[in-house]
Length: 401
Image (cartoon, rainbow, N blue to C red; front, top):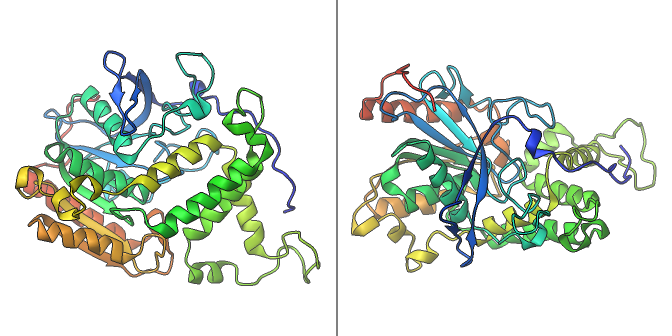
C-alpha cells in the first residue's frame, strides 16, 4: 500500500443510518461541566433483546473512543460485523435472550448523536469548533437522560472497556442508585500523562493537516483525512502489545522480497497501520476525534471528591450500593493493571462489593474486543451471580422499549 493521500469521501450521512434516535434537552438544556448548556440534542442508540415486565434486565454498553452503538449490527458504513459480537448476543456472556442491551453513540460522536459534525440549531451549519467541549461526565449525563426516556429506573448492569470503562465508573459515581452492577474493563479512574501525550500527537496531526481549515472543513467541503489517518495509526499502536505485533508481523516484508530503499510500505506492519488509518477516515469525523480524546484527557474521578478516589465511592458517606467487577489485561500498557488495582483499592477502602481479575494475555489493550475465553467466563460468571442475587430469571420477556 502506498503512502498516497486517502481519497476524498463525503461526510457520513447520519440521517440515513439505521437505528433509533431520541431528541433530548428540548425543554431543559443539559448542563455541561464547561459551564455551558447543550440542548436540544440527539442521541442515537440501538437495543437488543427484550425489556422485561418490571424493566429490571437492562444492560447499558458504553463504547470506546472510536466505537459506536453498532455492537451487534453489521456496521452501516464499513460493512463489518458489530464491534462486540464476541461478548454480546444470544447465548453470549451478555446474553440477549436474557438481558435488554442498550448502546448509545456518545455525544460528541459522529454516528448520529449530536457532535461537531451535526448542524447547530442556531445556524443550520455544522457546529465545528463551536460545539462545546465535553467530558466523560457529560456523556454519562446524556445517557442518563436516554435511560430515563426509556422508563428504566435502575440498570441491571453497565459495562464497557477503555473509554467505555471510564463511563462505567462515572455512572457508578454519578448515579449509584441507578446502577445495580458495574463492569469497568481495561480502564482507569484518571487519564495518565502518557495517554494525554499520545492523544496530543493525534490532535496535532489532525490540526496540522491544511484540509482541517481551522475546524471548519465541513462548511468548506474539505476533509483532513491525512491528519486523521495518522492520528489513528499512532493510537492503534497503543492498542496492541509488542508481542502481538511481533507475532502478527515481525519484520516481514509486504508483497516484496527485498527492501526498496525508499519510503513506501516495505514492512507488513507499515502497510497494516496505513490500512487502519485509511479505513478509519471513512467512518469517523476529525473534529469528533479531537473532542472525544479531550474528554478522556479531562477524566479524573477523584478530582471532584477532594482528590481522594475512595470518596467517590462513598455517596452520602456510606459505601456505594453498586456491585463491581473490574478486569484488566496483563499485556495492556495503555491502561495497565496497576490502574485497575488503584480503583479496586479505593473500592475496598470504601467497603464496596468488588471483585477483580487480571487476565493473562499477550494481546494488549484490545484484548477486551477479541476472543479471550477467560475474560468471557469472568463476565458471564459475574453477571449470572448478580442475576441470581437479584432474582432475575432467564428469558423473562414481556415488554419491548
